[in-house]
Image 1 (cartoon, rainbow, N blue to C red):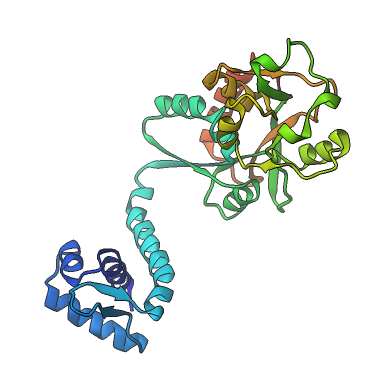
Image 2 (tube, rainbow, N blue to C red):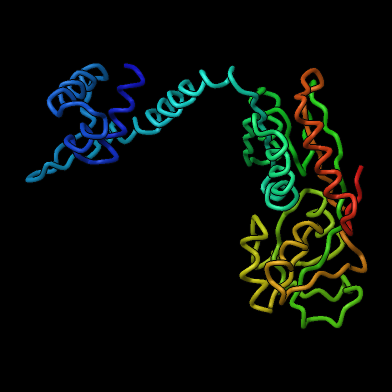
Length: 296
């Protein structure tokens, strides 16, 4: 059993045909049939069966069980294939939560890449916990998170704090400060930005019922907000982006606002990638004059 066997299983499963799979793998159909027969003897069971009256092949229950393992093996094969390039170029792996990748990071990453054309920059999106895990496992060089977690030998450094704002239809209020106590729970769209925000929502809003709609991102909330019947609360960077793409919305401060949201950057105490300083400097210059944001 080897990586080529897994590649063969995936090719047959995707195409549903020995002929198409052989073409994809650049081998003859008889050679591929013999290889599959040999592999099925090795695992001790049939992985494919022919559809009666057709040349199509379908996975058996055992074959379906094998597919996730084959996909992992194939991913490993691709990673191994990239190893030869790792020593020839500088690589910079940045892990981040979605909400940072969609707001403050795009321009900063573009400027960093313009300044460092010989560096291969890789940005990946994860949860805050998984961002910590990537840096801890040394598959990531720096991470940007909105929720702190404890890992031994890792530093969590505050980058900036941002105010939390009400996002509502432009016609819903004449302006100024929105009264927190006047918010209508039936029209709320909840996005759980962090644990502090959710505690504030429970303690301050004191809604006695669960929200009708809870979503994982501002992108999912926008269709609701554009309808003119809903509101949500979001960090300044997300609020500014929402208003920029949907002029029918506006941002308002609240009379009793949630705690500011903090964005941290994470790295190992004993491992500092030289590119991190430049990216952080770009971010700080980009954010220093933004309303509602305090650099730390």
